[in-house]
Each structure stands twice: as C-alpha cells, then as structure tokens.
Length: 348
Image (cartoon, rainbow, N blue to C red):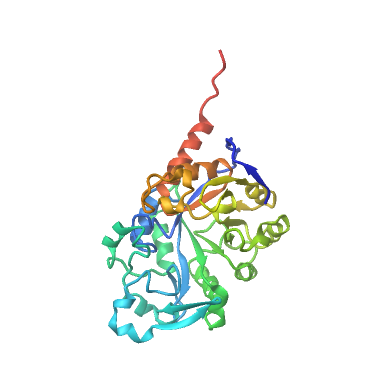
C-alpha cells in the first residue's frame, strides 16, 4: 500500500454508519467470551459481538480465543482433567496445555472462564469463575434477545485454525455451515457474519452456502504477513469470495517500531475500489496497545486515548472497527456524525 504523511483528514461521505464490533465482547471490563462480556459490549454501543470459534471433541462450536484452554479457563486447577495436559503442534507452533478437541461439550461446560490478560487487566480477575463456556448458538441467541426494532445486534464470528481442525477430523467449515442452517442464519443480512485468516476456509463456506450466503470477511494480519492479500490484485481476488476485509489497524495507521504514528496508507481506498468493506482490528484502550502519542502516563496498563484512534480511523473512511472497549468507538462515531450533520454557517 502507498503511504502518506499524517495530515488532517476530512470525513468522507459514507452510504451507511460505520459499525462497532465488540471484540470478544467488551474484554477491557469483563473476561472475554463470556455472557457478561458480550452483554456489556451491547450496552456500550456495539452493533456486533465477536466470538472466536473453536471445536470440541464432539463437534460443537464454542467461543474461546484459542483451542488451548489454560489461559482463559480454570482447567489447570481441575484435578479431574490433569491427565489431559499435553503438547502438540498447532499450525506449525508447538503448544502445551489443554485443548478443546480433547473435551466434549458437556465437559467444557463444567469449566469456568478467567481473565486471559491479568497483568494488563487485573480488575477483571474479580470476575474469574463466575461465567461458563458458550456455544455459537448461545452467542447468537444472546444477540437476538438484545435486538430491538431499529437496532439489530449481530454476531461476527471468527474461525480459529479451520484448516488444522479439519486435519484432525473436525471439519470446522462444514460444522459451521450446518449450524448456520440450523440457526436460520445463512442470509446476507442475517444474524451472523463470518471471518477467518485462512482464505481456503472462506472459499469453502462461499461454495457451500452459495453467493447469497452470509457475509464473509477476510482477516489480514499485521505487516509482513499476508502482504499479498492487500495488493490491488489480492483485494480483487478477495472480492470473488468475501464482502470485506478486517486488517490489522497497523496496515492503515502506520507507525515506527517505538509506537510513534508515521502516517496513513491507502488501504481503505484500494479496498473500496475492489468493492470491499474495511473493518480494522483491534482497538484497545490500554497504553501498551496505543500509538505513543495517545498514551497517558508511563503505566503500560493505564488507559490512553483510544477514542482519538477510533475517530481517526472513522475519518479515514473505514466501515467499522473491532474494539475491546466499544464505548470509545461509539463516542468517536457520535462525534463524527454530529460534525457531518452540523449546518454550514455562512460567512459574514
């Protein structure tokens, strides 16, 4: 992508209001992928809630950040499961722990969620043990129950390691397609959007569910990985099987190694030319995740100015943002909406 120096940006005219996706709910305030986190995200202004999906031994789609469970549940403290700790290679990375594919859904339901990043979000540890593991169907039911006339809450589900799961006999895309049909969620404007890093998985879903199936979004990792996807040719290719991209935010707001903001790329413009929406990830309010000029104080876990980061991305024309703190993006979107609707005052 071409890059420009950072300049004041005038919001572009958009055909619809950009969406706010609650990344794993609202994990800045509640342990991720819990009912409390998803519900709070909706209360804080999220239009969509985002579960990461992995697979149980008996083929259930469950909401966890990864198939390894020890960082997000109390499995390590459960003596009855001590013998299931093992080491395996997942997508080329050696991982030791407890894995969803070694547990039935009934067993997973006995586990309790814990804060996955306690060093960054210590207050969230007060909720450890209060909430269980959810299925995709339960997340969709939660979103539907919180929808109202004029405000439909949807689910933007991410497939984790679909190719790897298929290699061990758990065909995630087939399982998902079947579940979406069962949930009556296969329409383009239906309750579920699906995203994945692996193009093959999205192609399989498009082939299986047809061109009138649910919206698909190609995730794009940070710079240096999947670079071919964000070339003009790569974006045109994505448009043959997906409706949008969800790139790492650093592909739009470029920065130095020390975190200083360098400029903006033309990825949003190029993706729109290919007919794709753009929803970058992940906006987080803690200093450690923010550009250096938006940090407040020296504490990496302290809260910085995430609202300004969201406001800049909206001004650049993104179609949505994926965030751990939906209220910051909600306020930023409200600011830009108010500016766009403000009357033009004649000069004296």
